[in-house]
Structure formats: C-alpha cells, structure tokens
Amino acid sequence: MIETIQEMMGFAFISRAVLVGTLVSLCAALLGVSLVLKRYANIGTGLSNVAFGITTVATAFGLMPLPIAIPGSIIVAVILLKIGNNHKIKSDSAIALISASALAIGVAVTSATTGLNTDVCNFMFGSILAMSMEDVILSIVVSIIVLVLFVIYYRKLFAVTFDEDFSKAVGLKTSRYTNLIAVLTAVIIVVGMRMMGTMLISSIIIFPALTSMRVFKSFKSVIISSGIISVVCFLIGIFLSYLYNISTGAMIVLVNLIMFILFTILGKIVRE
Amino acid sequence: MDVIDIKNLSFGYYSGHDVLKNISMKVHEGDFLCIVGENGSGKSTLMKCILGLNKVTKGEISVSGRIGYLPQMTEVQNNFPATIEEIVLSGTLPDNIRKIFYTKQDKQKAKEIMEKLQLYDMRKKCFYELSGGQKQRVLIARSLCATEKIILLDEPVNGLDPKIVFEIYELLKKINKENGITIIMVSHDVDRAIRICNKGNRSRKW
Image 1 (cartoon, rainbow over the protein chains, first blue to last red):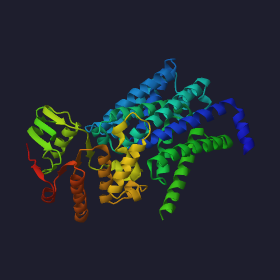
Image 2 (image 1 turned 90 degrees about the vertical axis):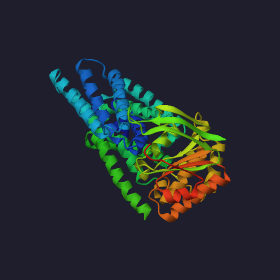
Image 3 (image 1 turned 45 degrees about the vertical axis):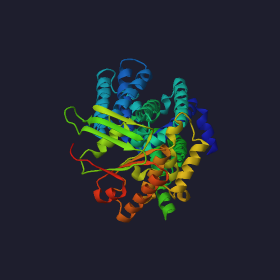
Image 4 (image 1 turned 180 degrees about the vertical axis):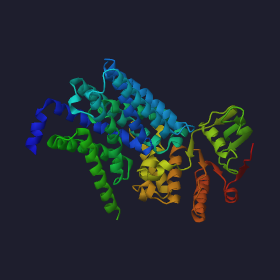
C-alpha cells in the first residue's frame, strides 16, 4: 500500500490534487455544519449548478472561468440566503428554480458554441487532471482565509446558527454572519467543483456534518470531527480511485456514504 | 425607575395595516409584567418591537440596558448538537463581542448562573436530549447571561405539562425577587400567568 501511495504521489498532478482536495474538503466540512443545521443544505447544490452555468458560459466565450465564477456565485449565494429569510417565497423552490435555470443556460450556451466537449464533461463530473498550479495557489489562499475567519467568528457562528432571533435581539449583526457563510461556501464550491464535479461537490459539504452528528453531540466536537471525517474520506477516496481507476469525485462520495452508514450504526450502539 | 418607556407606538407589517396602534406603556424596574391575549392579538409583534427586531412605523421606544431574550423554540433546535454549557455561554457573547474566545469572567458568570439554575452538574449534556422544562431552564440561563436588568420571554411554557409550568413560574418569580430582574412575559395562558405576575397587560385587537 505504501508503495502505491509513493507511486501515486510521484505524479505531479495527483499530488496537486491531494493538496487542493484536502484543503477544500476541510473547509467544506466546517461550513457544512452551519449550512446543514440551518437547513440550508440545498444551497450547496444550487450554488454548484450556478457555478457550472457561469463557468461553462465563460469558457464558451474564451474567458478565464475563475475570475468570473467566483464573484458570480458569491452574488447568487447572498441572494439565495436573502430569499431564505423571506417567508413569501419558499427557499427550496427558489433554489430549484435558480439551479435548473443556471444549468440550462450553461448547457444551451455551450452546445450552441463549442459543443458539449470533454471540458463540459469535466465540469459536470470532475477531473483531478484539472488542477493547475494556479488552482493550487488559489485553493491554499482561500482555505487559509476560510479557516482563519472560522476561528475568529466561531462563537458568533454558533450563536447565530443555534438561535438567530436571540442573537439579533442581543445586538449581533446576524445577517453579516449568514452572508459570510454564504460567500465562503460559494468560493469553496467554485474551487472544489472542478475536481469533484458539479454533481458531487455539494455532497462533501453535507455528508461530513451529517456523519459526525450521528455520534457527536456538542457543537465543538461536531465541527472538529466533521473536518477530520471529510479529510479522511477524501484521502481514502482518491487512493481507491487511483487503485481501481474509478472517477475520483464519485469514489469520494461513496466513501462518505460508507462512513455515514458506519457512524449511524456506531451512534445506535453508543446510545444503547 | 422606568426601564422601558413606550410612547404612541404603531406598527404594521404592510403599510396601512397596523397590527399595533397607539400603544403607550411603562415598565418599572423590578416589575413582573405579563402580556396576555389570544393568538394573533399582537403580543409577539409588540415584543419584537421592544427588542428592535421590528422597526416601528410610528412612536418611540426607549429601553435602558440590554434585554435578555427568550424566543420560542424553533425547529432548528430540535436536533442541534450543542451542550448546555455551550448554549449558556453564548449568552455572554454581547459583553465582549470583539474577542475571539470567551474570557475567564464569561466562564465564571455562566458557571454561577448554571449553578443557580441547577444546570451545572449536567452541563455536558446535549440540549436536544433534555426534557421540555430543562430546555427552558437552559434558555433562561442564557438570557440571564446576556442581561443584568430585563428578560423578555415569549410563551415560555408552551406545550409543557402543568407541574413543569409551575416550576418554571416559580423559578421566574425567584429570579425576579432575588436578583431584582425585570421580567416581561408574553403568554396566552391567561389564568395562571396573571396569578404569578405583579402587573398584567391584556392585549386585544388594537
């Protein structure tokens, strides 16, 4: 096994993917805890479709996708959260609406211009070949920002996630922190999407939080264990994907699923 | 001394539809005020105005000091992983909002309040595994961490059985008498609520 790992890391593109993936998995899991608890889990799916739409359109016009996809997704993320707070429109239907439209626009524009080539397929299902040196630098910068902000705002994120009305009443600017979560999630999705794929990126946000909540019961332990679970699942996933030549994104999600089942059983045993 | 002074308050969610019209009232220090009325009579709306969660359309509200708020429980909290300690401690947040971690004083304050409310020994327990009465005690403890003067409770005994309701009311009375904390409670449990407070205020369709 050690030999296989050494062989794997010998490929520059794989070692880049391992670095980017570890950081993205960690950050996605931390943000995921708040999103899952606030019942915003669907936002991950919605945002990944929006990011797909923007990325494919940008590529079709021969533009660099990242500088457009990041601000674009951030704007949509903030709008989605605003809708979530407005009781007139149900946020889950709004998310379904926006994500289907974004997906359709992306596919339509691409098929009219360059055609549905492997690039589009990679955006959809992910490819570890997609990681360039710029991606590595970007993901390191973004991950450090996410981690630092997470530590600085940890207490407030807890208070706002647990009870928004109380937090607002005692003077916290709650919308600032929900926007912060939305913005960071959007950025992590755009960065991670190209490796994991549009269809699968939202799962690395949701799975670790749900998995650790099967067993752990304090906020702090859920946060810490989600981060660890997420990174471990990613590393096992990418290793198995190399070993058996299976799509990396799909393998990571499957490992997450198995971990979720294991933790569910473990949780049952602990309770009895 | 007046801790809350409301003058000619009006509020509506849509323009032209005032839920509250021309309300004036004063709350004195040490009061145990109960706002009772049927569902839809505007109790919670009034409370949200006092807390500053609703922007008033007309009139004035002045509040001295910070209010510790005890909202109705939400669906989110039903399976939220958090210990009693984490929740009570989060009440101290407004004291030093710029700090990254809780200070020693924060932890000491939370500890004293938890001891007073008999929560300290089970502080590592998970919130969603507690009984309804225990949950309310935790939320009362958190609101006490957030204020030295006023706490405002929104339907604190909703869905609890009579024995627990009695316990919660006794606890509130004790906090009111011993700590001199002004309590404002919103409830539709008219009969019992009126009996424990020293001031009543019945809301009807304004």
